[in-house]
Image 1 (cartoon, helix red, strand yellow):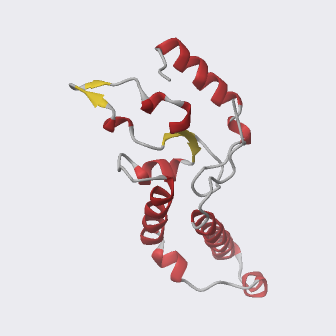
Image 2 (cartoon, helix red, strand yellow):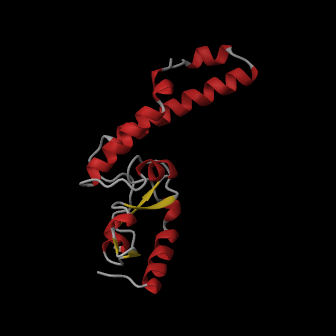
Length: 149
């Protein structure tokens, strides 16, 4: 199925209407971007966009900004390979945080001021990273409405 500009605008408006309910298809975080599973750059002919599969609804998923940027225009054999690529990039990006010590509630309570706030924030961030990495290990699409449109 091909889309002209008018059809594409209608599709994006429909996707935007469901945005607040959507989660990243890769890691399950709150979605902010529309992501092309197979990058648009691979659908060009003679230097011009080829309106075929890259505008197809099966090629559009919701993603968080980070997963969208990490995957960039890298082509993968399938959705699972792309999820594993994103997972490896997140592991590399946050390896120091993930290797760091996890604080107990009691230890955090003993701290004061900005240090307490910083440690609490980093502990919550670490927790969120672990959830995202767990979702990236699942072969299915995360948090997507079965049929958004």
